[in-house]
Amino acid sequence: MEDFEFLRHITLGQYLPGDSLVHRLDPRVKISVMLFMTVAITFNVSYLANIILLIVCLSFVLLSKIPLGYILSGVKPALPFIIVLAILQLLFYGDAFVPYGTESRTILRWGWVHVTSGSVQLVVVSTLRFLQLLFLASLLTNTTTISDLTSGMEAMLSPFSRVGLPGHELALVGAIALRFVPILAEQLEIIMKAQASRGADLGAKGRLRFIQTTRQMVALIVPLFIDAFRRAEDLILAMEARCYVGGRHRTKRVRFRFQRADYIAYVLVLLFSAAMVAFRNRMPF
Image (cartoon, rainbow, N blue to C red):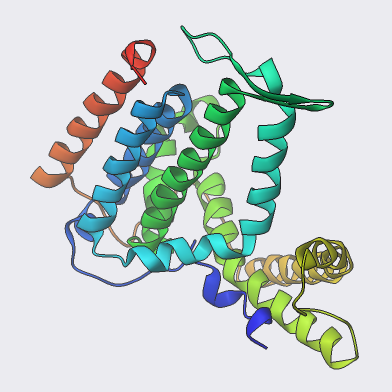
């Protein structure tokens, strides 16, 4: 049954109580830091820049006192798909990706297979980007409760309400989506165990077994989506039965106030991200 335990590998959306510096930061600062770092990660394609960004993300993990192994355990369910995509990029991307200021060099050409220096760099940079975004997203949800995240997103989106953007509703949708991640993982465990108890060949070991497992996942998606729709309908009915109304007239349980650490973190990460974007084409290596 160990192969069916997906819930223990879901780190996104799981709040871990703590008293670290990252835990104490204002949720609006954490969301802003993630957005700034995401922009810097998106615009940098050099080896050196992504190594620097990875080191910075790892420093955030150390400051949060969240075990690194716990965050990396969330990669295990998606690892086969990541490996397949990396191999496809390496072998068949060819000259489609040429880093700025460099020339693509052919490393291996054999029929349809075309490995270049650009495709190698694409695979390495994509892997580093995935790790960076995983660290940022996991830290945001591991160090902040869902209610604080919802309030923080609502506060950041509230200025856009003047142009008709429903900030409260969008924040609520984001919070519900995060809540559904562990719920859907738990439901997937139940479905797989139920099918395995009826004789379905799930979770067996073997060479290239993940290909057959990927095909079998198609049969699991349908009942999983049906259950998700049922849960969404139950949630809607429950909110309507309680006369839920979103909008500006709702009172706040907690009012956030920026502290000195919040200002320092906000400014430092903003300056760092701006520098990484501004000098992205001057990065060597």
